[in-house]
Length: 195
Image (cartoon, rainbow, N blue to C red; front, side, top):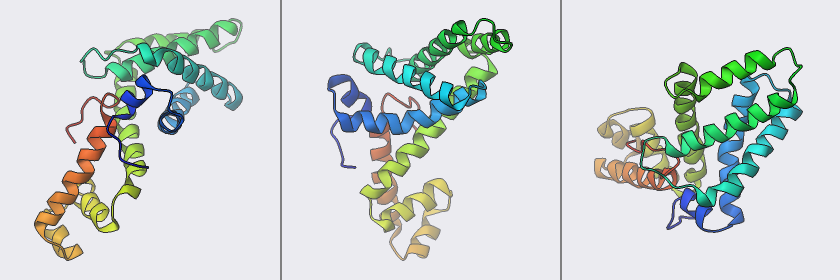
C-alpha cells in the first residue's frame, strides 16, 4: 500500500477509486459480519445483509458530511447496519426470533446503551488493528519493531533502543512515523486519533 495525500474516507467520498473501496471493504466487512453473527444470522443471510450495508454505503457515502462530533462516521455506519437488519427482520415477520432481534436493534440504536458503547469500542479497536496491519509493509522491520515495542507493548524507549541497538531518538522517530500514518489513514473513520 502506498502513502496517500488524502485519508481513506476522503478518497472514498471524492472518487470511485477501486483500491480505496477494496481497502474499505477489507476494513469493514469483518466488523459488520461479526455484528451480524451476534444477531444469529446464518452465514448466507449475513452475506446478504453485509452486501446490503456495503451497497448503501457506496451509494450514500459521497453525501456523508462529518458533523465534527466524535463517532460521526461510526454512528452513520451503525445506523445503516441497523436499518439493513430491520429490513431483513421485516421480511421474516413470522420468524420466532424476530421480536427479540428487533428489541436488540432498538438497544443498539440507543447511543447510551451498553450494546452501542460496545459497538463503538469494537469499531475503533478493529479499525486501528486492521489499519496497522495494512500499514506495516510501508515501514522497515526495525521501525515497525520499535513502534510495536514502545506503543503496543508499552516498553520504555530506552529499553527498546537497547534491544534493537538503535538510539532512543530513532525509537521516537519510528513511533512518530507510524502514528502519523495511522492518524492519517484513520481520519474520519476513528474519531479519537489520540493514539
